[in-house]
Length: 328
Image (cartoon, rainbow, N blue to C red; front, side):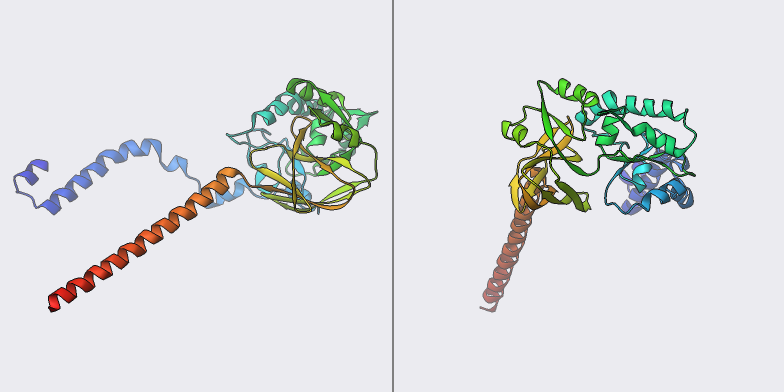
């Protein structure tokens, strides 16, 4: 084909068309090795993967804005299907935080293994719920409770196990205990009553002094992926632990519109110092990379628009001058 084109025995347009067809025919078999019918599913099969099960429907009837679900019908930390319906304690993310992976390895996996072992001895869902119970000041599932794991799905066709001891979205602690290292903070979770105590590395002295028993309460009033709002009623100054993963590179906190620092407690949760009185608490995910990107994008758009307008003006002026010169 190339020879015919070079020697002008085939028109240029036909030469290009023939080369295009030959390239497609040549590459198609190779392409089908990497992308073929086996890589696609029908619309109905795709939808069936995420069909709502009776267990999902039961959980969705819960009116609370936010809680987490553990789905044991698959692999909790590699199956993303539960996250289609619920806020999952597991799921899959290639960019998972190392700190969360530490909690999974050291606490969540052993706690799940304990739960499954005890589950085999249960005859009813009520007995299964009792696995989460506290024995004195401790429980065998401290981190599952800490992360507000309210439901455990054992079968998609049946009712889930309800965890009555999940700590909720936020709670006020009556004491703060220190930790000398990250490892000590992580290890302390299994031997601390996290309902009443926060484990903190390098806890500020003012925070330690402020933590004391009170009748305070904190309620989640708004939930969205990038914004969380709470109503706090503080009998006195206190320390509030939020059942959310601590991530300083983006999350910011405000109390009544004034930005306040977020500290880490329990190796993974967010913690605030909240003064006495009634307050509006808001968390917003606003990473500097996003705000910087928006600023650069707006400046670039403005520069592009200015360049376009300048080009149009100069082109118009040039055209007018040319017409004027021609008229002369």
